[in-house]
Length: 373
Ligand code: ADP
Image (cartoon, rainbow, N blue to C red):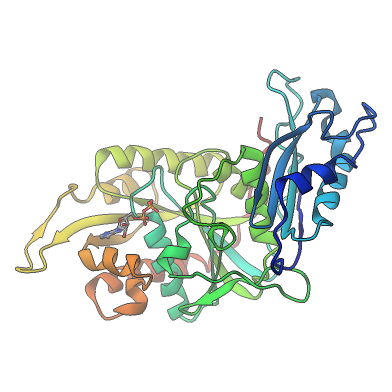
């Protein structure tokens, strides 16, 4: 499943035509034609040296097509200007029910040198999940832990903006990508490799491969905790993360609004279904404190997340107020816990970090093995 990762290409970036040309040399033994000529290459994405596509095979071939997949990956990886090559097997819709759409799931084995992995998740976008993930990660590092932050939102990476990171990751001697270090944490995002505002059309299996690579082909070690900023929602990408790594647990972020809480409950239910413990809920945009008079108002209601947590038997990790400075500092790429650690809002994030740090001391829970249909 893993593609080969190579050095960032100097000046020249590989083109789509070059990739297809290389794939003309890979012959599918089943048809005697090249995979390109046989129309097996689907959803080809070539971006700044990162190449990914799905290899469409007849359902009955299933995992038997693995050597061919590997050959494709190697042929592409060998091209000059290729940073990473990721090929996943896929079969047409309407396939035999026993054919997995996603290639065989390896047993979750964790990431070498990483003690615990936790997910920060929400049932929907815009609730402040990424802001919590970033401030939580820095908060944990200020508590003395070695911390990594993985931006797993392939469709809308936000860590480059939240941490004002514009450089590209370098490469370690073992060919792994070096995470970028800022505010005392190591971080990696697909946004470091491709332009943040370039819309990406990725098929599900490609998203899963990219995530696996960002966990396993990045030089994270040694870390006490890797915080994974999950893509919003409860779909395949979230399932894959739980499937591939032993998540210690998940932190769910929600606003107090009922609607958001319905989504938060869906996220909780998803993690419970796949046996990933819920470390707790964070209520974001909990209370609005007027910057002029100090008056507190509850724009989105208040206490809903605490009540939901109690009802679902999950811990309540804390409330983050709705304050302009959080957004302003986020936009400036200087998270509030780093920029204004003495402020009330930074202290609110620190309290969440303390609660999470406590729960990390509990025994590690192995992620379940799930095969996606
Ligand atoms: P998500 O990851 O859930 O999509 P973000 O973390 O990107 O959400 O936050 C969405 C927007 O809300 C951002 O502009 C962010 O700066 C702002 N924001 C998040 N939390 C707060 C808060 N507590 N107070 C004020 N603004 C916030």
